[in-house]
Amino acid sequence: MAKIKAIIYVSESDVKEAAELDSLHDAISRELGWLHDSGMFIETWDYLDRSSRFPQNSSGSTM
Image (cartoon, rainbow, N blue to C red; front, side, top):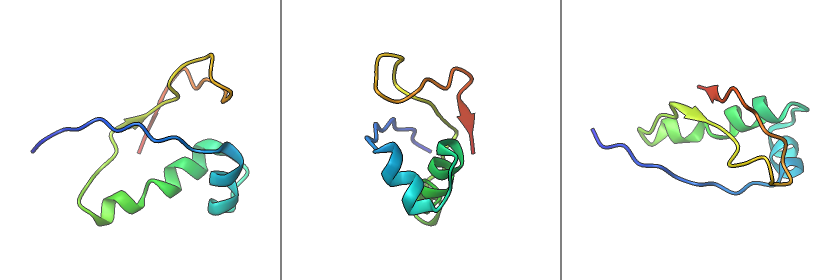
């Protein structure tokens, strides 16, 4: 099994609206779920850096 790293740029408001959720964490987790249908699984996700316009999630998240 191969591992790859992908960088996905998202608009916080767009992803929350698409998922119909107020929580960015929950919205990203739900929206990345489509990868499962392709046989891909997300081990973790996190924000790239604190200087971005999105808030930092220092603990990271798992799916």
